[in-house]
Image (tube, rainbow, N blue to C red; front, side):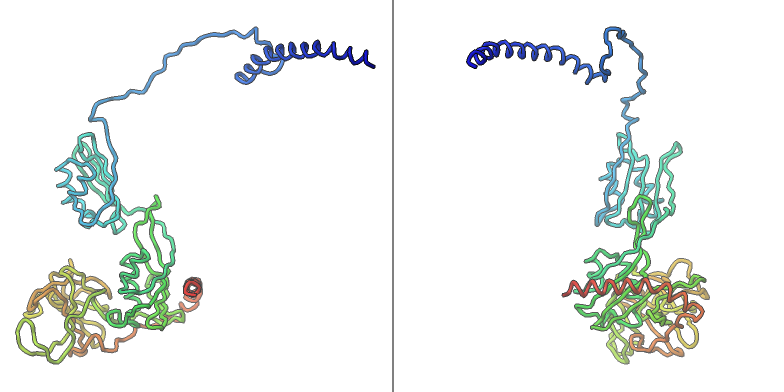
Length: 437
């Protein structure tokens, strides 16, 4: 046994030496082979001795480039800021082109109303010469200005818009506009809310802190996914002093659209309560007041709404222009004749709507003129009269005639179209209740 152990001990160094030599052989032979396999993907047992190496040189034609400054063009985009003018906007766009600035002031009508937040894109050469300009205006039309060999040209087109239906809620803190602003709703949505519920809520006097509303409305986007404008309210709920009012939009096959309660009752009055979307009453209807211009006591046969000069004035009902012109203390005056015994008058206008003439038909809500201070006026405001059989009555207190409710032949279609909208309002109502808890 001892002899076998001694034999093993004497052979161990030889075994270790053989293993060591074997490792060196494997290491020396495997490194290049593994390198070849990894680098070139050569299959096992492939002979590499017969591979012929050849160097090939080819001439590659490179694209022509130019370092001339006049060939360099730059695209820039800027968001319109509050108080911007065409000149200040072009300056930020690095446009140094008096001819282009003059052209835009006289030919680019969309730029007459720069809306903060909207984006303008401009392409210039290295020296600031305007080559191209694009602007998506508040009306949804896209303005394009292009420079050609003959000079600058402008054109507008209506982009293809895509509609999305959104829902939002807000609570009144100080005003309807402040509430819509707080949740990112456009002013046009606030105006629509006031119009659709005008027969139920007096937004001049009835609004209270804590009132809340929900709207289901359209937003229109261009092909790039950029919001162009807010569209029509499809359904709304307004809770005023704890009482809920609901409205759903429905359009007949003939194209006439209006707002109805979920039960199909029309919310549209034959007359709007106020010819201005929002304003303050500076002087009410009274049999005696001290006239600020004549400096004596006399009856005030209408209601004065204070508003900045140029504020659009709307026809409060469908009618026909009975008078358009100047009449003593009224200044620039429009009188509309409506169906039956009713007529309305709009005084102290700064100007009339373009193309408005005596005998012309107008629709409810159509702009007929603009607030001014012509005639016997000491400040900018609209004098509005509501007449029954030519006798002035208080437009803020008179019971306004209601327009017809939905035609029975459309009742079935209304129920089908109104249900999903009413369901959306109910869903938002549940969300609001959950949040309040």
